[in-house]
Figure (cartoon, rainbow, N blue to C red):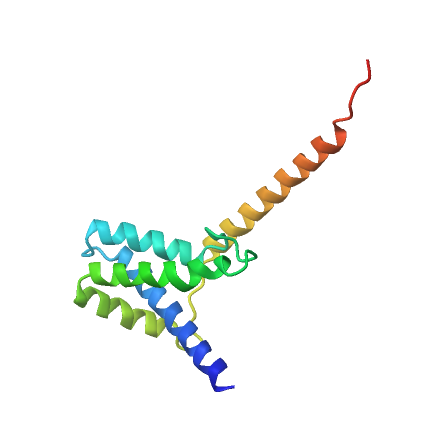
Length: 136
């Protein structure tokens, strides 16, 4: 049981760190190259779409276990310490009970992407079923 508690705490810290990097990417004093890399890493970390799908044994979790932490470590080194400290404090405030960050625009975008993929799949299935061979 202590292992699960520790795992949950690490996941909470990782979420807070990703939020801090998101805030740092929007900070006006962050260098442009750090903004670009931070935005890419945070978008990938929160994206429901993975580079390597999770259903592939062993390799499926490679991006969550290796790529994202390495990307976060690199971005943390690129962002100046005072800016990172300010953004970490803001991220810690955001995760206090009753003050959770909510992005309805991001949620709507993800739902829209899934709806478009479902519509595309339905069109593909319909065209595959409607394609009957014509005999000469």
